Image (cartoon, rainbow, N blue to C red; front, side, top):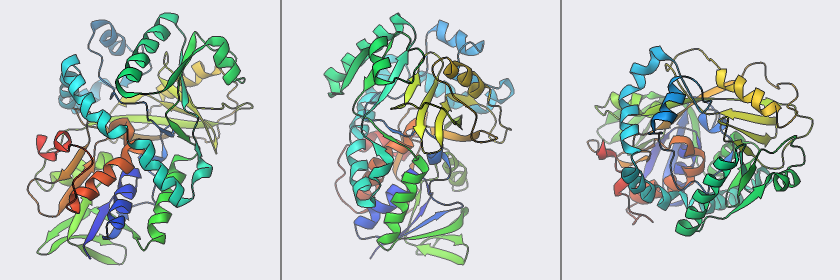
Length: 410
């Protein structure tokens, strides 16, 4: 029986472990924390079946000036931290050119269109259906012109990929969400996506499924990963763990580990914040407020607000300015109530400059495999990329063309 160490207890790591286990591998999952306590915990909880186009960087001067002058809440940056982000951001900007972005979208769409189906398998096997709602989410636009442009984009996605949506007037949105005080110009109801009331809890449920099938989860230090004559070894709480293969699925921490092995993977690191609120009247479905760059989602702990991207230093203290602005904007739509937590949560979303995950065999080390860099979509894509990696490691023909995600492209 082949054996493997999977480094990382987020959605991507747990899903990779499950898919390897399904193919007869003996797997040890290693993380410093319990599964689902890092980046996978902090998102909006949407399994985004509609997101076939990855987020491009704006290229028009007006949008760039709005970001540079702080007049948008989607993106915030700290000037002193920009040198740290400059090179991958320039590559990201280059790959956001229309022709390049269309090629990237073709590769991205072939994996994300499998996301809901792959999650559905794990949800049923883990008995986690109580955490999942299958009604989609709303994308609200406060401006009529912006809503019309969004409808045109939605129509193109329906034509190209069969994505389901409904355009709602302001009155239609209020009927769907009676707790709203106002509804702007209306919304897009994306109908193919599923939503989760406890994202970290869903990862925990998948991890429990892994354990129930004989998998082992240990606390350990991924930084101790070393190559051995027979494979790989990592230090756990009770001593070293050895295996013939190792999978690096550490999200934003993956490049730091791999740098010690001579690899240089560029990564755009986007910090995001969230906080829960004890709203008197919650939402039926998550709502993204496009004008102010945040999302609200009904969670088991309250109404969660999640922010856009902050570019800051990796060890910089929290500066939840975007969260404060989002809270002010959200108060115009709902009665938020009091914050549930004293301090906001924050974490880092890892995105490669070409918006595609790093997925496959490490070029220069036998038995070392990579699965990271999913941008905003690690929670959505984990079961898909985990399946593809397990197919590669098991000598199976992957369900899609793997060339666009190959690690050696960097």
